[in-house]
Amino acid sequence: MHKIHVPVENAYDILISRGILKHTGEQIQKLISPETCVIITDDNVDPLYSDIVTASLETSGFTVKKFMFPHGESSKSAETLLKIYSFLCAEEITRSDCLIALGGGVVGDITGFAAATFLRGMPYIQIPTSLLAQVDSSVGGKTAIDLPEGKNLVGAFKQPRLVLCDPDTLQTLPDRFLTDGMGEVIKYGMIADYGLFETLCGYDLEQIKQHFDEIIPICVSIKRDVVAEDELDTGKRMILNFGHTIGHAIEAYYHYETYTHGCAVAAGMCIMTKYFGTPEEYQKLKFCVERYHLPSEVSAPLPDLLALCGHDKKRTGSELRYIICSPPGSAEIRTDSLSAFRKHFERI
Image (cartoon, rainbow, N blue to C red; front, side, top):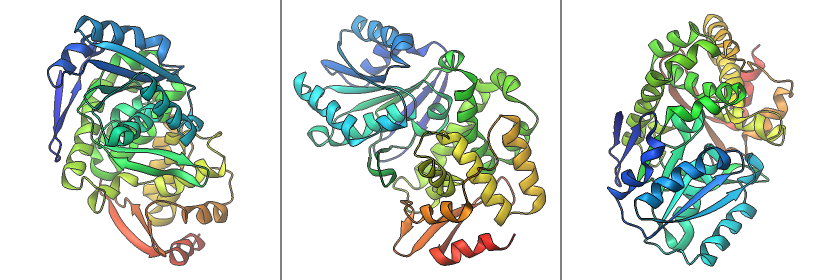
């Protein structure tokens, strides 16, 4: 088992181990003693893992309730959040009880936000079941829902009490979801670990499946170090947004229907490197993302994407903060006016 400690104000551990889902109850029991645990999940994950987690919780003496919603980014909405609140009220959930996010990034984000806001805050546990959630979104305490005007525009910082990461859950994922997660894995190599990036360039999607036990802890440790230094995203933590400024614009342009988050981030990283890196750096990143069936470009007009960047939550007043990775393995935070940012893309 890998145990990674996150030394933030409300510190917690990330436990990475195959088969750990069967021990959910005993792991939670070591930390807190709620009467009721509420599993929040989606209709993709529910038939795969809810029964395993429920059985473990009940064996440990917990009462278990479950709320399920339709899978997909469109469910990360105010409408779904209000339904969660109503369910918690109907079940008479108290601040001493516990929410459990069982699923991918959407489930983790909306469950965390519900935990941050229901009754002004209650404990929650992250059990990420997708590659993207295991390496990225389940760690760090960012929670949110989307608005029609943009992604993650309403949210809160709420650290989980525990993260239970079971790589066995990746065996049930279709390749397209592994591809989606690889967008974030490549990001970690680009921002902080050139050796990881080189390793990723040497594999393809089928080969990388044999190396998740090593790769997941590397990515989580990178994020742990960044979050520990900048929990509230006012400085260094911004490097985790490499590829996201344009990536979020891509998602919004296509109404969150055409490109998943990891795919949009991959294209965003390539576009940023094309305009801010060297031709050699761009070609190598393009080669890497395409090995994992990720897009290196999209058909959306670049001016339209740049206009959408103005709605990004990393904007401060009339300025936009964005990340470049040149050379790969290092990250730089830059700040420009929106007009100056757009002018960078007139050079090619």
